[in-house]
Length: 66
Image (cartoon, rainbow, N blue to C red; front, side):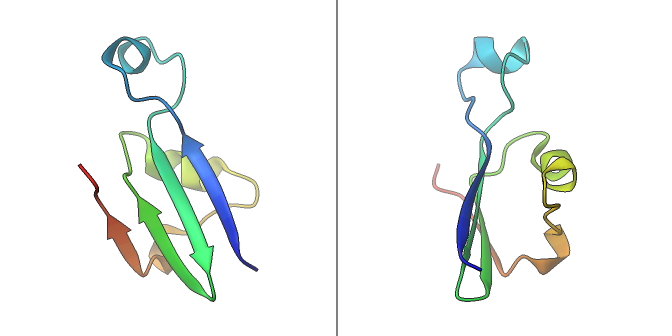
């Protein structure tokens, strides 16, 4: 199944320091390929606590844009 899962959308220092939202990270699954884009602190924990759980061992690539 193809999907995009936002694991967090925070990026500003104030938001991250105060943990108002989870830090950035986007999991994309397309045609059986799993890609994690711009993972931030805590992204692995969010993968394991998401529903359904996302297994980091199934990643094919990690992309860092900045």
